[in-house]
Length: 447
Image 1: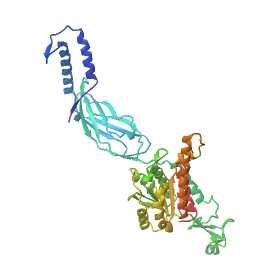
Image 2: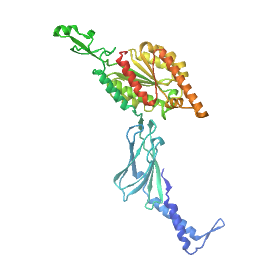
Image 3: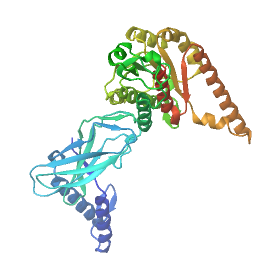
Image 4: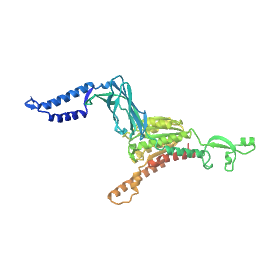
C-alpha cells in the first residue's frame, strides 16, 4: 500500500509563507467553534495544502522503480565487502528522486542503510556502500522502503517491498600464517633437514638409494644390494592417508568470550588450521560438532578445500547453553571411526563438566585412538595471577586467578593420567600448539 510521507520542505514552506503574509493587510476572519481565525492564516494553510496535494499527485508511483539488492553470497567475519542497490526505471518524462531505506542488521556495521538517487527515464542507477560484519551467521535482509518525490519535494509516496537475499558471514581464518609456517616446517622434515635417526620417522616405502654414512644397517635392502653390488638402503616417508578428527564441543562451556571473541570461534580457527596442515601433508581430516546431539559431521578427506568446507558448514554454529553429551559423542566416534586416528576434542577445562561427563567417557577412546583435549585459556587470568597486590581489589583478583589456574592444572593432570594429551594455551598460541602437537604425533609414528 502506498502512503504519503512528509518531507522537511513542507514545514519550511509553511513557515516561509506564514512570515510573508504578516506584511499583507488583514483579511476578514472566519469563525470556527466560536474562534475567529484570521483570513491570512486560512490563506496560508490553504495554499500549503494545495501545493502539497499537487506535489503528491505529480510524484511517480514507487512501483515505477524496480530495485535489486546485490552483495556477495558469503563474507569472512571482519572483512569489508560491498552492498549495492540497482534502481531501474522504464519510460517517463523526467528524472525521479528516490529515497530508499534497507533492512540491515546492526552487526553488519554498514556505512549507511539509506541512500538517495536520481533515476532518469529508461536507465539503471547503482548505489553502493561498504559494510564490515562483526558477527558470524546467516543474514537475510528482506524488506526495503522506497519513497518517490514530486517536482516540489514536499510530500513523497512511500511503499515497502520484499527483496529477499541471503548473506553468510563465515568464521575468519586467523591462523593462516601459522598454518603456512607449520606446513613448511613439516615439508622440511620430510626431505631430511631433520636428523634421520628418529624413532618412527616413517614406515611408508618411498624409494631406494645408495647407502650413506648416516644410514642405519637395518634399512639395507639386501636384494637390491645383491643386484647392484653396492649397499642400497630403503627410503621411507612419513605415513600419509592418516585420519585426524576434530570433535568440536558446542555446549555451554564454549560460550564464554576470550579476548573479546567467543571461545568456540577460537576452536573453529584451530580446526581450520589443522585442516590446512593435515590435508597439505596428505592426511585426512574430518570434524564433528556436538552438544546434546551431533549437529554437524564433515567426513574425513584429504582434499585441499577441506578448510573452506569447515568454514561453510560452521558459519552459523552457535554454542547452546546446555551441557554437552560426551557419551553420545564417544558412541558415534567409536561406531564411525574404527581405524586408529588422532582425535582432537576442542572444549574447555571446566572442572565440573570434565569430571562428571568427560572423564567417564574417555577410556573407550584412549584404547583405540590418540586423544588430545585442546582448550583456550584466558590471558587475563594469567595477567592477574602475576600482578602484585596493591589494594584489596587486586588481592581478590589475584586470588581468583590463581585458584582458576590451579583448577585447570588439576583437570589437565586427571586427563593426562588417562593417557590424554592436553593443550591449554591462550588464543595467540593455540593454533601453533595444535600444529606442533600434530607434527609431533606424526613424527613419532603413533598413528
